[in-house]
Length: 280
Image (tube, rainbow, N blue to C red):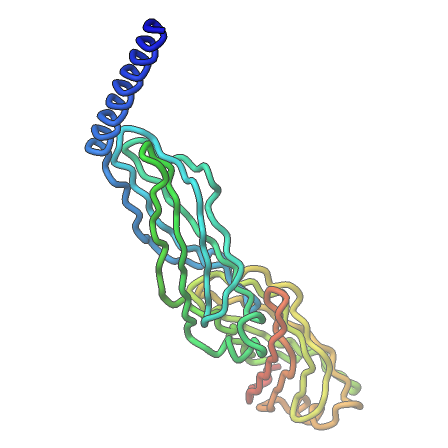
């Protein structure tokens, strides 16, 4: 019986010694461990069209410790004009190197039709408000540390490209009609590339319907750049008497395009009206 009591006492003493050692080690670890730092770096548009935009919020996580850390959890929400939109997060388990830093990207896709009932109204704005909120959990030797994700700002709303005609050129004039080449310029007024799937619509010259114009897919137009193209159109004088008089004599005539521009699947009305000089 005495032997059994002694064994229990030794086991208890060993356990207390181990616990004391762990507590001491934990205390030393707390003193040696340096707090990681999470800072907001930037907000950027990774892609945009007249239908939607993807906004990346970029954070920098710095690890000043000689041991690597990892991302344990992410709770994140993103709002535009006070309406929550779909937001992505960095993958859990991302490693933050010892004595290093990692860039964490939080993408959010904003579909403008989810923000307003009339997209064109939204596209008339210069900027839109956004707000990000949530928490980031980082796995450390001391457990999971949580950092707040809070940021507010604005992003540039995509602008509808500027579309205008240059002086048309008349060729192949006959008694029945003429072929007219309509030079068209499309300018991207944004600070980011914008896809334009096409421009099409009904054309009037001097008030007469003369036919339809279509550009086809214009692809991605770089920021601030202009895409120039020439659209030929055969005009029948019998069905466009007012246009026939203007084209036979040359000179000035009113040109009006009533159509649409497509970008990212979004159709926006396009109304271009200019007084142009027709060249022979």
